[in-house]
Image (cartoon, rainbow, N blue to C red; front, side, top):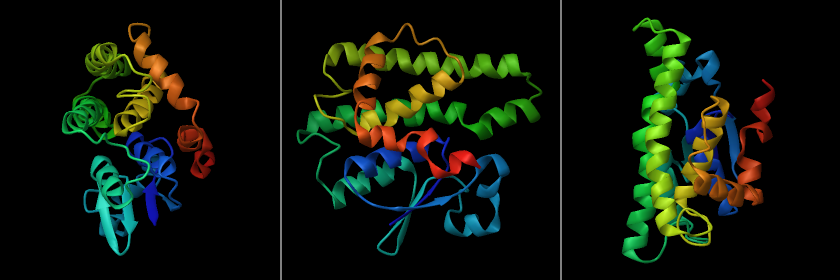
Length: 211
């Protein structure tokens, strides 16, 4: 199994967490987004979108972090990252999509680069944009977390929703976003970071963090 990854990217961070939670070994292939390696012809031949992550397993290549996690869940079902009951599975997917579809796409580096280079926005405006969409999404997740009142995003064991939440909190802290309005999310984050699977996946623990 090979994972094309970048230490700071939140999407590959999600997949690293999932792989670690399931105890699956993989070989990392580093794609440095800051140097534009994702746009190289060599990587475009692997993933035409020019995005990370990409997972290779048993001769197939899969893009998109949530699709990869769902694949891992189906092929390697233990320990589960989705609940057994249909309502629980739908809720975990919904929580995951708040991050993957409502927050992250608006704050992706290529979007921020477009705001700077093509729309002529300065750093203050770009940071305000970033902070606004973080706040919008985390407010929804905080309300959901208060309603669930569990140790993790859904229940008392980590799920795909936690694989998505933790990298988003890392990003929010990196951009100095105010996280005080989300105490329940921070408690969930702390519970996740007590687990080795999350610790080993974090950016500072990746070999390419030094490059």
